[in-house]
Amino acid sequence: MGEFASLWHEAAVTSLGFFWMALWAFILGYVVSSLIQVLVTKQRMQKTMGTDGPRSIALGTFFGFISSSCSFAALSTTRALFQKGAGLAPSLAFMLASTNLVIELGMVIAIFLGWQFVVGEYVGGILLILVAWLLIRITRPRRLEKLARERLGEAEDDNDGEDKSWKEKVSSREGWQKIGQTYVMEWQMVWKDVLIGFTVAGIISAMVPDSFFQALFIGSGSDSAANPGFLAVLAQTLVGPVAAFFTFIGSMGNIPLAAVLFGQGVSFAGVMAFIFSDLVVLPVLRINASYYGWKMALYILALMLVGIVSVSLLMHYALVVLDMLPDASHAQAPGDRSFFKVNYQLVLNAVFIVFSAVLVWFWRHAQQAAAGHDHHEHHDHDHGGGSASLTDKVLSALVVVALIWLAGGLLVTLFAGG
Image (cartoon, rainbow, N blue to C red; front, side, top):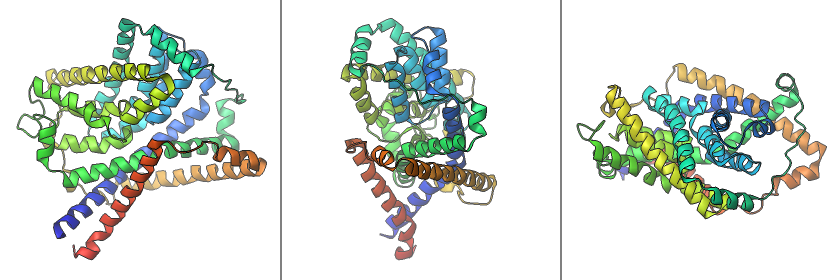
């Protein structure tokens, strides 16, 4: 019991430490994302994007880059773009860019994994978009597109009176209230995934033996783990998406777990395939099926899988040729990190927590103003979503389990004499 209590405590502290390391990057990234979402209207985005071609792909990529990093938000916006006439390839370019080419994700990867993985994330994100575009041009799924558009129906007008310039928005109280609302919505979309992801990462780093990863990811943990041979690298690259498929962890929650995998000797290609797999997880497949139908959802899944495996392998061997492959043996074990100490991280976290509190204050005032202006409409808005989906219920249950686990892990040593 004493050994389990010690491991439980280590897992809980590691989970919280991982989150503490990434907190300022989360806040900064969502602040930047919120500013851009308020200042760059979706209407302008949709009018500018065409149906196909290099310009449309480039614009879809750019708009994705400046948009949200939440996989589920990206799915919703991608559907809106596709429904309003954007082509499949530019829409998928937006989806891939909004989950891979985002500022906060790069910051979190830099903290946990190092610069090679940051380069891999951005270069790989662009390559994924190009591979998806190429595969769409080869396969030409026009019938699937037609069926998906018929299923979605006509797009509703999205005219919300966004006539103010970005300067007017930035200099007005209402503008900052909207920024605060967007910022809170960003966190509301991802906090469950983040909490579960960091909790799982702590459990795995503290409790799962190295032998498990060496068995799951063939070739990991060996002397040549960084580059264990083509068949082993290929196997690890295929295992990455499979391991991620049945999880509920989004892209941000995946990073600390990816750091654990890298520390256990999984190759660069295997780790990158795991990171890229936030768009091939089971909840994403289910949501795409509800939007476009199962045939299109499975087609998109196939595109993603082919792209993830090929791009991860390509980047791995490009780094091998350049002799720049990161060495897993140099990875610092999670248990060896001093998470909570007085350093630049403490200062950055304190500064961004204060800024976050200011945005939450604006959000609360916006909520109060909306309630005072039209109480009945606001009440209907809050409760108009209907019953929670099965995924929401599962996530909520996992959140409760994660909170109990973390609280118990922090307190267990008090009762176990540890």
